[in-house]
Image 1 (cartoon, rainbow, N blue to C red):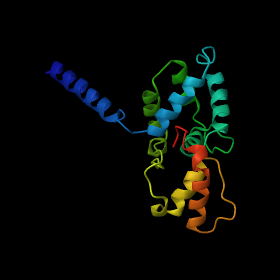
Image 2 (image 1 turned 30 degrees about the horizontal axis):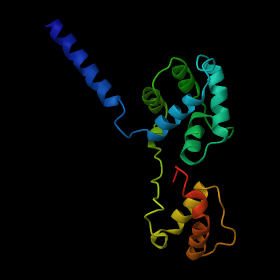
Image 3 (image 1 turned 135 degrees about the horizontal axis):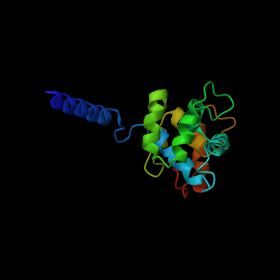
Image 4 (image 1 turned 90 degrees about the vertical axis):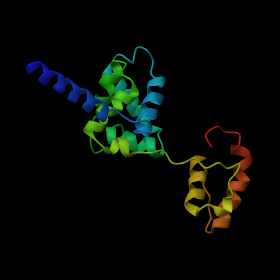
Length: 173
């Protein structure tokens, strides 16, 4: 009778572990950002959590959009309200995979896994006239460009058409 109870307990623990693990596509911003950040670390920095935290703060200074929000949640920005960088730096110093680190971070702050990257716009095949002004502004923002004096949708379209030759060769479109 006792052996049967232990078996059920182990089975329940295994099911719970599978239920808590990340599904494909979950925590995409967290996983991609941690992988990208970890790739920038030198070998001597990878073993020291304090150095990892300092490097993450430097990394976050240049972050934009969803990565910037991720940095804010972890405490990598000066204006961050909370700081759970230890939950990133220690597992990273142990060479824990990014998805496992994100599972741990999700337990501390569920918002971290709510972040999603914006859908990329295929400028080669899209009709700019059918896009919303918000999407046109996003294209310009992704290019780090501004549209001074743009008031109407046609102004934004004109500016994007002017800049298209400059940016169409880039891989991040």
